[in-house]
Length: 340
Image (cartoon, rainbow, N blue to C red):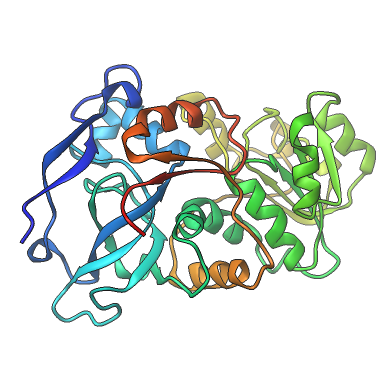
């Protein structure tokens, strides 16, 4: 039985996560005996990064309430099952699975071995590359879950703020699969990418004011999804471009007290006091096997693809986080941890 493993780990944060990570080949490894009911032990093949991977550890005292240290970051993964709970036959040793942890774990996907709830994993379908499967993770499921079928159907109009990031690139494609007409935003260099993914209209936020452009269209959208958190009053002015009865979904939000307070207050502040007058929903993604399976099928069938900005070697994880932190990654950043 393996007792130690290779992994990136942090014990305390000194400035940025990437400056606080240490790589070691003598880190205590999780084992089958430590599994709880519904958990599986995975040997990681590929991982993909999300801003929350560094934002949570950098929350200071609050981070200690969320996850104990030392800890290995990483939510999104594709890997090989090497151990299961005695009474759990959902997966068997040797199966290759992919998914995302709903909650940060002490044993994340930037380690040689990790622990995941079996209901947050799906069996890797034939024809899906592990790197692309790992890229689905949190971003793919966030995009999928933001497209509520009550608001998105054939002929619906969807506005996606932030179309070139991990969640946005999936969101454009999924909305088109569902039959919607999509308007999105990005910078000039990513306009053609968003169009290639199916966007019907792309607003270049470096050239025009997003709110002014949306106001010109009138109340035409059935759903608005904000992956960015800017412009600051996008929700408060959503009545100018969302139909009555439409929904505004907040995905991206800055992890600051002010931003979080503003986001939470949007559910209760009325229009007369400066609030919005459209239904507001803050999306907290939940990893679900059925969602992973559907997204994986779309990728295998060629209806959607994982947009990968760059693939990093395991030893270059700090560089991968530096790239992620710029906020200019196009699609997902993948780290190749183990052998495929």
